[in-house]
Each structure stands twice: as C-alpha cells, then as structure tokens.
Length: 257
Length: 211
Image (cartoon, rainbow over all chains, first blue to last red):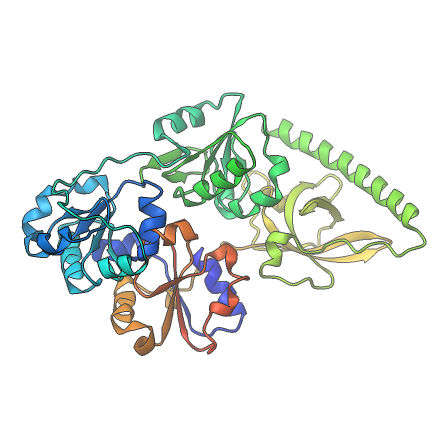
C-alpha cells in the first residue's frame, strides 16, 4: 500500500517522497509504537482483543485510579518483572502507560524491547490523558499476575481449518483471494477466486451468496476488511488471519502473524 | 489438457465477440438518430492514477485468440474486442516458453493493460499493448529503520517531514510509529488535503511491510 501511495503523491507534484518499506514489522523490533487513549479503548478494551496493559507507576499511585484490566509493574521493577511476561513467541501486544505518557513508559518499553518483546506500545498522554478524555477509571488493588490468553478475532478461521479447505475445497465453500491483481498473477490457491479488497463493494454480484466464503490476503489485514464488508451484506464468511505465501504452482505456506 | 483449455477459451472469445458485436449494432439502431453514448475507456481500478487519453484504453486483459488475431479486454462491466496484426508493439510482455510466437498468452486474466488503438468503421485495431509493471521502488527512494528513527527523534517540525501510515484505520488504531498520521491507501483521494502544502516537504510512507 505504501508504494502505491508514494507514486500517487508524486503524481500530485510532491518531489521528496520516500518509502519505509520494511515498515511496522521491522520498526517494532527496535522501537515502540504509539497508541492513543481513544484507540486503546476502541480497538482493544471494548473489542475485547487480548493484550497486556501495564501500569508502570508506583503501586500506591496506581491504586488511586487506573485503567481497567491493567497490571501493576512499577518502572523500578521492570527488569526483574520481565520473566513474568508471556513468552515472546506468543507475540502478546504489550501496552504501557505511566502518569503522563512520559519517560517512565519509555524506559519500561525499552527494557521490554531490549529483552526481545514486540510489539510494545506506549499509551500517549498516559493515565492523565485517559482520565481527561472521560474514560472509566477503577480504583483499588491492581492485578500483579500477567495473564495473556490469545483468542481468535471475530470471524477468524483457524490455520488448520483453512488448510483443510485449501487442500480440498468443498463444493459449498469458496476461497476469496482479496489481494491485488499483481499478487494474484504471481500465484493463487487452487480454486480460489480473486476479487481485490478495494473492489469488493462494486463486485458483490460475483460472490455467491449460497456458499460459505473464506477470505485471505497476504497478512490477514485486507482479509479482515473484506470479511466485514461481506458480513454486512449477509454473507456466511470467515477470514484467515495469517501471513500467506503462494508460489506459481499454487503451493502455499501459512504462518501466524 | 492445456491445449483443450485453450481451444475452449478460444471458442468463448469467438462467441462472445459475435454476441457483443450484435448487441452493439442493435443499440446503435435503437439509439439513432442520437449520437452513440461514449463507452468508458479507463477501468475504475486504473482511473485512480490515469486519465482517459484519446486512442488509449486502460483495461483488464480477458483473453486472446491468435486464430482470429483478436483480444478481449474488460473495462469494468464493458467488454472491448480489438484486432491486431504482426506489427503489434509489446511493452513489458515476454512470450511464454511454450508459445514463443504468441506473446499475449503470457498475460493472465485480469492483468492491467494499456492499449493504443486506431478506430475504423466502429472497429478498434490495436497497435500497442503495455502490461502494467509491478510497482517497484527505486533504491534511492527507500529509507531504513535508522533513517526513520532519526526523523522521529527530531520530530516533524525540526525534521521537516510528514510520516504517513498507509495501513487501514483498524491497524493504525492498534499502534503506530510515533508522529505518524494515518492516510490509508484506498482513502488517498479523499484525504489529499492532509498532505503538506509545501510540495518539497519530505514525505515518508510506511505500511505493514509485505502486504
């Protein structure tokens, strides 16, 4: 998506356009990401997407008011506490906040990143920002045990189930490949139909209503967007949340994102 | 097996060609004496970046029939059939190994193509066909993690840059590179006014890497 955007910006007359092609997957190996308080609430807490929310203020301060679901790991104890975090290969999204979104959060985030954790997010504005936005605050003792139980996103099909369907697609099922045409031309899963995600809204007529639809792309992002579009139109649909590589023979490799 | 498929698709091209021609004729008759409606010449997917040009089509390749020297392309719902001959110019098209004298066989259905054509008696004749190259970024336009780290440390004011996250909003909401703004690629047109006023400003795009 970024190369296409860059090209279009150049068409508009921008003369100094660059692309950071490695993007987020490389960035998070050495750096933290930013999460706004609004996004923390909307995209994680309210959607009930599993994550680890860490309050790095002194416990006594945190008990006066904290964000629901947070565990307490005061910044002075962060090095010691690293062993308490879920194993790195679980890739648990970790969100860190302090009072104002300042140095303590950065320090804790850096300790985790150095230890090999990713992605690590800092909540911008910290607890003060959360409170100022009028979001709900809890008081009392915070959890001290870090619990992370990954669970599928709504509409997600397991890699195992997808593999079965892709090896031998039942007559009542259609795999919908929502990548772009260049990607599709380089190789597709046998029996799949290509409708790029950005064209779905114009091309519902080509997607059979009487079949179960399973969408995939190359990362899970576009597959999930397509899932929502089809769901809204009343389709029986699931999406694959996985990294997908397909060669020109239609052989594929799936990997958890 | 392969041969069978090819001859089958040949038959389809031929019949649909005749059908379309028949329909077009009927429409012209019915619409007379009003001028025939202009057919679109640029597919929606191409119209993001390209304007219509006289004598050019931007379309999705559908099929080719070497027997009749004709090609069928789609411009959204509409179908266009064009003839061609040996003088056809090819751009970015390499003949497949199993059909060295039929280079258009290399095109896959749906591939974006630009066609130059001439028109006579309502029939289009193709003189050039160019396949859209995959978008590649020149090495001097690529920046690495270190470069972005330096910019972010300076901040947009001092660093005089705009960092743009081209991922869809739900992904941006899950966490973004500090100082980034979200302009998802499909919303590029709608959000054009978010780009800096000064066109010399450094703009750095990123997304989720290999999407």
